[in-house]
Length: 315
Image 1 (tube, rainbow, N blue to C red):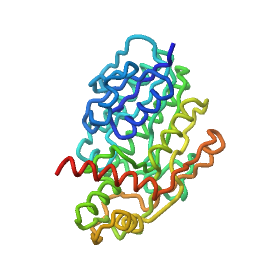
Image 2: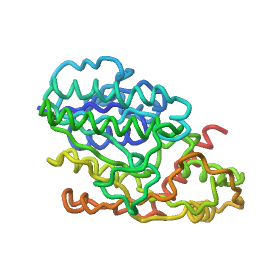
Image 3: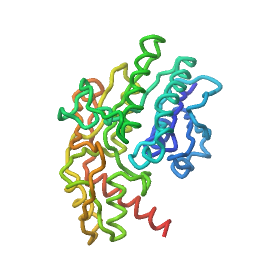
Image 4: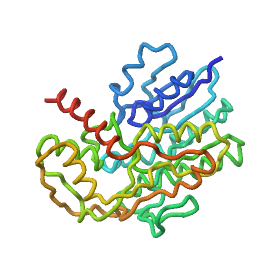
């Protein structure tokens, strides 16, 4: 009997790559997505695959999956600032009610549960780089709080199900991830930079560009997630690329690698935007034997090729 995995948010950017990877691993995959930010085009290549099933479903409602389930990977949530500012209530609900429903399914099926948490639980950090034992610096009343606090609640209820119901749980704190299947207009830095550069438009930076991020290519992240899923580690593990870069330098690289003549323009920094972001991945290295392998130029060039095709389709 093949192992069977349920992926909530499976039509999203990271979720869809997980669908591919688990099927390649020999598993059957059930994908749940309400398509608020997920896209059918991310998974349509799997529709003829006997090991893949898609249900259009909002996981804040009761989840019923007949038959056995071995793994549940909870990736349902708006994940970019543009999305969770547009859907603040849905973001809070999927982080709370959705996580509760997904954990309930894991309890019923005696399945391993993996939570897609985020580096945003660290907020605008006062410790750098960020380690898993840092509790964070989050403004619960700010506009970004709907995402940050939803994920912090998700982690708490996941640990409660582990301790009280003996559900086998994993928590991945995912740092900035990029790659093909990102939406052009999702509001995150890389899609914005690439699309603006390819269209010859000004490349917009929020703030003065001195804030830092650490960008991980999606293939590397998926390997880390699979390693965590198959491990016995119940406490949070940072998954990201510790290669830190300023947003200004990143924009300059994108302009160079696209061969664009675009100039950089500056806009006001959004409220509570983190000044620094860099994962300490010591735990991932020691526990999972994982670290990123794909350098930024290789990953960004692959993403540029994807966006060229997307822009051509939309032109």
